[in-house]
Image (cartoon, rainbow, N blue to C red):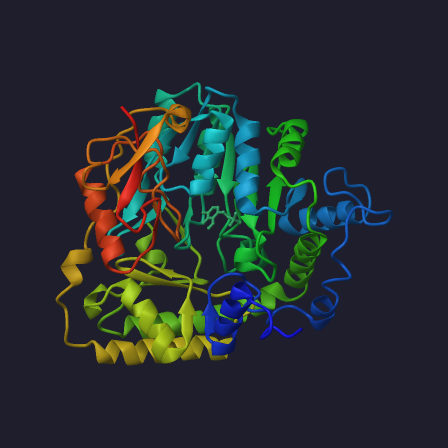
Length: 478
Ligand SMILES: Cc1ncc(COP(=O)(O)O)c(C=O)c1O
């Protein structure tokens, strides 16, 4: 039977996108299979097997999986590396469950990914939130504030660990070396959510990886920036601060008992390809990216993020972050224009910015096409400037926590209109997606400012998880 005779809404939608032949400046890092060798593509079904003699066992590895994990450990500079098949999300859940017991505290940057919040709910762990610096020119979170961390440690000597996001979605890398020193001096574990930094280890021209800079444990999404399939991730451990027995128990607990061997092969393949040619490819892409930066800096309507905007940290240039507000358009509108007029699909946009992701699956041609498209858009919107101020809202809202995560999770809820929810307590994680950095977590007060910001995002074409089509959200029933 052909696909025309069967009713396949998913296949149809995905093939429609594929047949449009857009340039994908988005995840996964293999870029629609461009960076996957034919011998892998041809054998997908032959390698989709299960635990039979000769194929090893992910959770008790002794043979080929053990060999592959050891090679990854060498490549990433860890003491031990684990392959994960439910993303960095699953890795973060396992890490949090390992670092602290129910009721204990960990110090976390508030602009963390929602999987961190979910992990803390699962573990019954309480966060001590710290802020990140705000990059005002882009209205985005920057590096984790070292001063905020120092204050949090002084006030919470009993916290078990520090868990920070670096790089963040926008490519901003925190000062891991200093953060590791402070954390270790206070007998805490440093865990890093390095979901966006799996490629860092493969070029000396990029910021160092978290493990190199002193983290005890970190998780990396292979699918985001390496030629690997969605859901694949690595978990790396360095040193002796992590209880490996506990960690392995937790990894087993949160994983499916039928891990995909296709995913596992991709984790092995991505490591091998990056070792073989990652540095050469990344370094030549970085030359093209320098050209892109130079060109965008000449454009009147656009501002491009570079390391000069990061005060105490570094920047990963494979993330192209462009503030578009001077064009009079929102990031969402520019994203749509890139797709419809130039066949370019970026990773995401926010009210002020667009974000494109470059990986080893890209080449000079795709970057030059992006430069040309940006030039054309810049010229088209040269005159207007009217909307710029509307988007100039800082997204670092004061957070008021009224209930612990676990208490909020267990409470009864009702759904009400978001305007009527002001003054009530959120039941859900409410987050623009992507990037998945929550505006509200369970147990937090719904404020006027946050509601205004949520409505602004929706009205401008953004997507918010946790708000339904009738502008209703879940709040705790009083
Ligand atoms: C900062 C950050 N951490 C963790 C995750 C979860 O990664 P995964 O999709 O591999 O589960 C994401 C996903 O976007 C993320 O942006």
